[in-house]
Image (cartoon, rainbow, N blue to C red; front, side):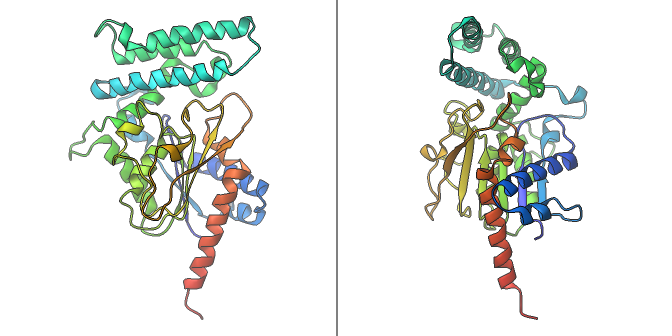
Length: 334
């Protein structure tokens, strides 16, 4: 089959790329089996195969001097974006909470915690310059970590880790942090994705912040993208993400032939999940088509949970099989 699929990861610290590629691939294979494609799932996970590639960029957010990759930077415009992100995050959590029940003492306790977090995140009620964006973010994160079951989520074991991950979104969208050659951080991140794409058609599966990176990387990509899949995407966050996407207004990249967007109702990162409301079609009329999936557990934002869904993996399998057929038809007869 050859390498015809590119994964693009989201927020998070330094990672073992090989192990993460294996984890994503295995989860996708699980979803493919559930969708009725066991043969392709077997080939996808074969030890001697190289069917998928992983566009990784987490190291660009963590300079060598950062202790354990836990440093978070949120200065200037990045700080302003971070503050808006916290407002949207607490609003999404509040909306989730309001839809739950019963309204017992535990519900009331969550209500009080969220009210406190909203007050901490609301800069309009605070003295100008009273707190740095980073300190304010830590305060909000500390409050949110008191929510149960969030306090048991290993992904964000400490407020500092939570802020570090969320700050990656603001740092990317701030379009700053130039290197010695003058390239901004977001440009360097996109280059990693463009390198993984190469010059042949690829299916692209992007998660979280990776959906922002992939969308922008594909805007100038010349090879066809038969299928773009976005998972747990923040693209439609009205305050912090959508207004800062490039170019404006957001639209489907010209060479994307199909775009499927998946969201879980409990995924607070996908706070505004129906992307077709906020993304214009390309010249061929392609625009995202959003579908809800439901996963079990405390933390549903993980890429692996999305990939294991038959609704997600089935279209990926079909696109890869179609690409195989097309490639076989182009081969000269023996």
